[in-house]
Length: 84
Image (tube, rainbow, N blue to C red; front, side, top):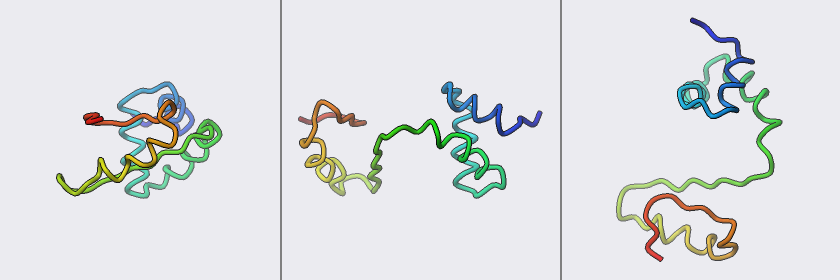
């Protein structure tokens, strides 16, 4: 079954995990429908900022994010363990 890009975007917007997963894969792999999907989703992105930090274990990722989280702790969400 092939979904229209509009239906796919709606599924992403309501949080359908499989639709989000397919969207991420399509965007990462530069599939032809990815641009249309992003155009439909962009108006709903709001004004949030997201910063991702990746790297091998033990490379200081948690420490790199700490100064930013201290600027506005009530508005910052972190993933993983909170070592305080």
